[in-house]
Image (cartoon, rainbow, N blue to C red; front, side, top):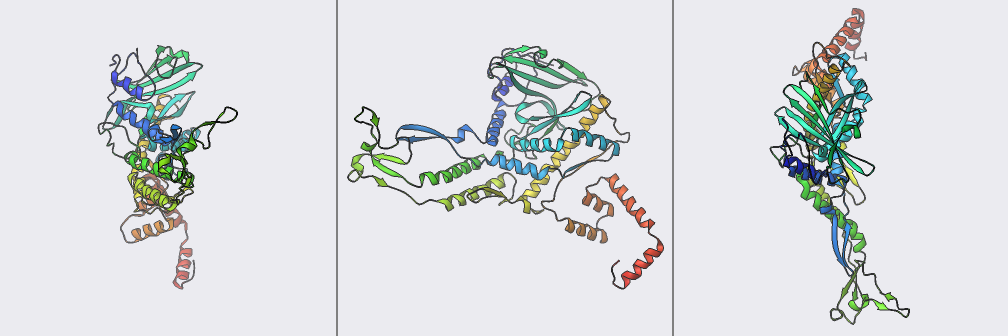
Amino acid sequence: MFKGIISKLKAVMQKMGLVKNIKSVSDIKAIPIDDKFYQQIDTWKALYQGYFSDWHDVHYQTINGRKKRRMATLNMPKVLSEEMATLIFNERCEINISDKGLSEDIGELLKKNKFTKKFQSYLEYQFALGGMVVKPYFENSQIKLSYVTADCFIPVSWNNEGILEAVFTNQTRKGKKTYTHLEWHLWEGKTYVIKNELYESENTSDLGKKVPLSTLYPDLEDEVPIENLKRSLFVYFHPNIANNIDMTSPLGIPIFANGLDTLQTLDIAYDSFQREFRLGKRRIIVPASAVKSVVDEHGQLQRYFDADDEVYQAMGSGDMDNNKIHDNTVELRVEEHIAAINSLLNLLSMQSGFSSGSFAFDGKSMKTATEVVSENSKTFRTKQSHENVIEAGLTELIEVIVQLAELYDVFSRPADGYKVTVTFDDSIAQDNAADIIEQMQLVASGLTSKKKAIMKLHGLTDEEADMLLQEIFNEERRQSPEMKHIKSEISLFGERE
């Protein structure tokens, strides 16, 4: 099943900044992912972090020679990813499980792992890098959850159901040495195998040599075979966007992947806006002779003007009138810059799934308008599209947790099975009172059932809706006939009940 050194793995790990030379890596399976895709992930990560050298390192010419500075940025990849993650998942979201006992067990487990807070953070990384992984594991008699970003996850095999096998990478430093841990999740027939390898190097650019796991992880085993599993012990989440960069890859792309040109132009416009106040205040043209160094009476070189300052422009004496100094100050173009930035923001919003006008720049700060989203807006439709994939991923995550719980006798699977539904926070676009009236009208007109209306309004499963209907029925039966008769008579005269 395993082979020797695979050039594709070498290329992929190079792009991830892990290795420069792989001299000996034993038992490595072929990696069918194009290493160029990980170059894209590096670019997306750099943009999300706010500094991409190819864009943000600006070279310019001064009297004293060529200089370099860092371009100002609005850091819209961060803004877009954070906004979408916040719209989709927050403390108001609920994971509903039909079986009461299992629901309590899962709820307690998620609470101990601080799932809501961690999941929202990594959901933001998912929208920024194209994907992320939640990996349940068993430790110290309890199930824990670990999270992996897209740049530390390499799929090995997959099918229509999803990614089946993968390798997780983690690099740490101890003293002067760099350690790279490779955790392989593989299927050998019907047996699920977790294989661990540790490599030691003198620097971060070389994988180095394989060393015993006990060097860094004394309690970690080289290989752990697991029987009776139906699915892999990790869940891959990605935005609900078709990967048009590598259409054969199972990996996702970030929400701004198709707006890179706009992002770059936006940063150029914002950088120009900032520098407008510095360079637009004054531009002084001086004779070339004025910027030359001269020796003063103490033998020291002196210069009348700062040669590194972009404000001063030197011109030959033949190009100036009587070698005079000219103040060439121009009017600031503030409104033009703000208009251009807002135009680009509208284009970027469209390219990343938001409605036009979702983001606005007033010259002082960025503002968002997602709190006034309507149900037929592009932002809301995009939100619901991503929610469909996330709900499916959370359902898989619950199943992985249940598998581990059965394996290590933490809790048992319900005999009658279970169903998982996720209720997302749609308060940004919904008027609850209007929703209630709408459902009441649909029930009254016979266009929907009471059960369906209850499920929609309360986000309940079939079984939970049945239970609520039974409670309502029982309460109505407990009302005495006399009380019903009195209420009917009062209502007949138009009085309040």
